[in-house]
Image (cartoon, rainbow, N blue to C red):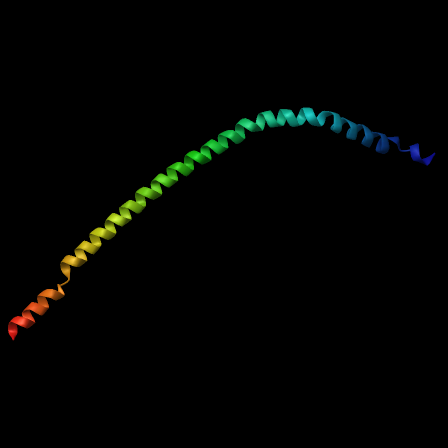
Length: 93
């Protein structure tokens, strides 16, 4: 019987397969119980980082907007007003 001559390959595979099927629920539950707190901590950290980044971006945008308003005000002060030029032209006539 050539089928049973190398019993380790056939029998070993069956034993390993049966062991995996029987132990899989236990192993999965243990791994899940270990990984769940780690995943939860990672999610919490991500949410905290997102909140801090959002706050920093808002502050940066506010600063840039303030600088733009100041720059516009300085430009408005430094450029001559067209209304004054018209008055001087009208006064010359």
